[in-house]
Image 1: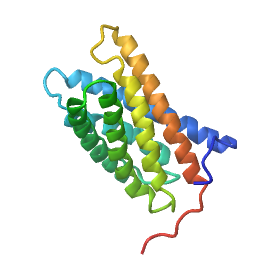
Image 2 (image 1 turned 30 degrees about the vertical axis):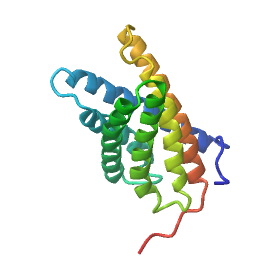
Image 3 (image 1 turned 45 degrees about the horizontal axis):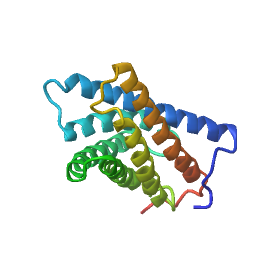
Image 4 (image 1 turned 180 degrees about the horizontal axis):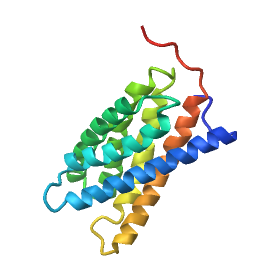
Length: 190
């Protein structure tokens, strides 16, 4: 992808900033809801559904006028995150420690990235880069987010570290998103 890179103009900077904020807000809302339901209904799959819904809705509002309708984006995000989080937990159990966390994050990114690619490929010829960006972003971001798992830190610290991980995800995927919108738009499929 030759068009990848940092924002070149105000419109790209605005898109990038909105994207990062959407990822952070979606993650924070999703995490809050997961923490709230943890007492009575929490599994990796449910957590993935909740976070996928929150992040997908937040991202969908950013993409709705530029790239994709909200509802399909949200649906694929929900499915991608739910499957990714479920498989990620299995990977983490099979490979505990830092490697398991990185691999788990990569699995979340792969699953969410492939699901969202199904929407993006209709408009962008090189949308396959979206998958790679999500794998990298979630491997890095999830590693940061998970660094406070099970530790004896305040709730505020958990949210702060989680938000930093979400910012990392938003920056990496935002750069990929800007790279995609720089491409010529593909002809609609028949």
